[in-house]
Every structure is written in C-alpha cells, then in structure tokens.
Length: 414
Image 1: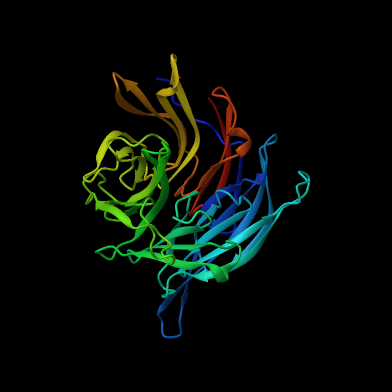
Image 2: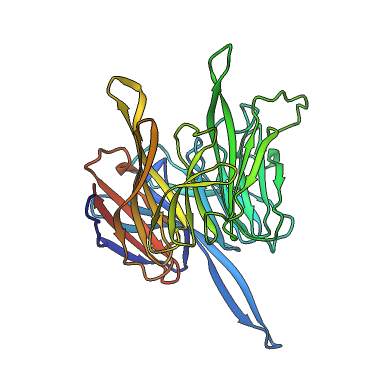
C-alpha cells in the first residue's frame, strides 16, 4: 500500500461561468474544451421568478512545461451545456448534450501544424427530445461495431424524464440530415437517467470460424440508484434491412440493491466476461466507487469510499500482466482512473484484478487526492501527453469546480 499523495495546484484560474464538463482534444493534445452552465434568475413585473439557462464552449490551452492556462476561444450558446465528449474515431469531432434536449456536434480545426492555433466550428444541432423543457443529461458515442451494420455510427443520450434514446447513421456523422432515432428505451418511473455507457464484449468463438462474436451492451444509471443492463444480439439474422439496432437479448435492472443513491458514472472494464456478464466500475452520489458485476441481480466485487459523490470516471490507462509461461493468459489487470468527486475534489485511483487460484480478486487503491476545489468537482481531465508514459511518470491534470468557477492544474508522480 503506497501513501496517498496530496498534490498542490501549479496554476488556478477562474472562469466567467460555472464549468460543467471538460475534455482534452485528442487531435490538439495541449488544448481542452470546457462546457459551462449558468442559471440566471429574473423577477417579472408580476413579482414571479423566471429562470433561464445559458452556457458556453471554451477552448483553453495548457502549456505542459510552465503548467499555465490561456483561453483561445469562447462560443456563447443559448442553453446550458450538460455534457461533452470527443468522438472515439473521428477525433476532431465532439458532441454536447444541452438543457433544451438537443445535441450539437462541433469540429476542432487543426492544420496539422503543431504551432498553429486550433478553433471550434459548429457543424449541426439536432433536437433529440420533442420537449425542449426536458434536458439531455449525458451523451455516449457508440464504440466500433456496436451497431449491427458495420458502417453505422451514432450515440446514445439520456434525459431527465427517464428516457434513453439511440441515434445513428450509415452516412457521415458530420451531416445532420442522415441521423435518425434508432431506438428509445423508457424507464418505468419518471426519474433522471444520469448516465449511459455503450460497450462491446467478445462472445464465445464461432464453432466454424473460431472468431468470437461482438456483444453490444448498454448500461444506464438513474437517480434512484438503479443500474440497468441491456444486452443485444449482433448474431441475429436481420431480416429487415431497416433494423438499425440489434434485437435485445436480455435486460435487467438491479432495483438499487447495491447503490444507496443515484448512479452517476459507469465505466465498462476491458476484461473477459465473468459467468457471461461484464464487469464495470460505477460511481454514485453515495460517495463510493465500486467494481460491479453486471449479473441479473448485480454483485459488488470491490468497494471504496472516495469522500464525495463520484460524478465522473475517466480511464487513463490499462496494464495487463501476463502469466510468465503463457503471455496470452493475463494474471493481473491494472486500471488507472481519474474520478471527479463533487464536493470532495478529484481522486486518482488504481483498480486491480489479480487471478488467485483461478479466482479474480479485485481491489481499489486511492493514489492521490486533490482537494483545493471549494465547490462541486464535476469535470476533470488529463493531458494526453502523459497517458502513454511509464508507471513512474508524471500525470498532468486539469480539474474544475462549479460554483467557484475554478480551473486548477496539478501533477502527480506515480
């Protein structure tokens, strides 16, 4: 057990609006995008209080040597930005989910010249909920081969009225005209669905080709503390060529047996299925990080309190340690994870799985705590130049807090 590090900020700046989400640009690794959410109240002539939500997208540059920050661009938007994610393959594209039930896609323009300054351009906005008073809370891009048609691309988005919807296209994701709703999944009770994760796992190898099939999953977490698992059948014969999402093979809800408050983060782990069910990391308002086995009833394999509500989880790297006499057989997995923990600040955590007598033994260790934020830490990120480095390297982080509008740069040496 290593001692927990307590890093201090190298730089702190204050934004003009509260930061709600943040992500580094894969194609311009010294730059990151911040989404903001400003709630304004005005009193009408009749004495009633009217609320309005506005926001912005802000492009910032991090100097990894001096560890200083500078704002490059700011785009005001007539809604609050709830969520922001870069596309996993078209890495200069990112999408945002808004307070008016819309999704917008933007492009970060880079010339390929490292010295050139990138810029943000909006490509399209699509109303993904028919009621603009229902906010879109979270957006997840589909991984490769999640849809049954190989050329398909798309995303899932969750809403405050319990709905989760999938949108996709066989065309260019940059063109809004071809993007259609592919499936809608309603909950039985009206409640916020805080999170959706789409993932694929390898199935049992085909008897003839010995190639493992791809199993698409969807996981959602709601404000009641329930985690919902949907498994789709990509091996099914698609008689209807218009069928854009594979048939659902099974779905189950753990009925909040394991989380005592809302499920706010879900990170599928790249490990083989255990008893034909995937393993996830989950975060919750109840301040715990859990290794969760997504069986019908659910099972907790490890648990660690992080002192604050675990709002977001970012996987930084995965290490696989092979068995010495069989490199294809993994004896240990190590996952380095950054957690945004609301009122407790940011945590750097290592999650491990060791095979002991053929039985996986999971553990969670807190490596570092950054606690300078004075309000809700909803968004954090890691400079991409630090992700490919060795175990004994510096991790360069940017984290934010909402009400005090703070951005902090800090480092951890592993």
